[in-house]
Length: 281
Image 1 (cartoon, rainbow, N blue to C red):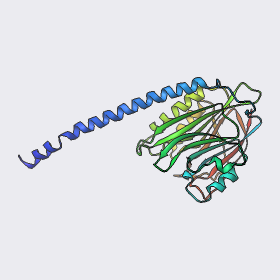
Image 2 (image 1 turned 135 degrees about the vertical axis):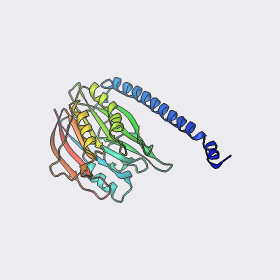
Image 3 (image 1 turned 60 degrees about the vertical axis):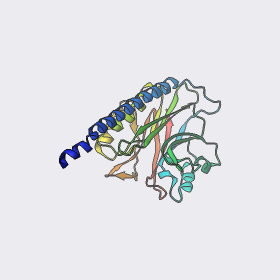
Image 4 (image 1 turned 90 degrees about the vertical axis):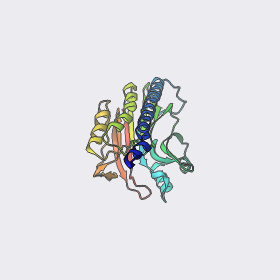
């Protein structure tokens, strides 16, 4: 047998393996899509239905913080968090580490925590964490896979009672998929969140690290959220962290007026922090 024929025989299994890997990937994708659809439907059915705890309603103005903490891995993060979040009603944190005991750094206050796990190792569990000064009436978790890295990017959804109102505030904390060709994977991640926004009657906030480093990604986010009545909060002294010249972090709101915004430069993360004072309409 000549060398060419021998090589063909030796590697004849490669096409079959490729087909098998494609089939596994497709099956996994279909399974995840169906699971996500069930989770979205379950969360949507609970909107506005969960009993609110007495004395836990929001009213008047609302101070919020959004910050990618870079896994709480740099010196000074705890001091920066305490300084920036000491008086906020809602803190939207991305790349938040469970091991860092983040709520414990705000130990002078009663803090409620909602967390969705994303990137994890044996010694480190990180994800998106929403801290609130009051007990949310609902919490839901969603995850999407980075197509290149195979690691989760996540969203935490919470709902918050409003004083003297039948409406509630929907708060979505998002860390968007990043390493992708095109915008299809980002669109898939936004789709269930858009579904919840469509079903929710009342004000809403969507804040976080959107990884909007391209014109197409930014246009997609703006288009999807505008369809559900959300507009981007603007920052006059805009020192938001950028990549390819485009800001990565955003706050979008519906049914809330903006009284004040600021970007807080930090050295304890590769993302500067966003703060806003909103007024419940």
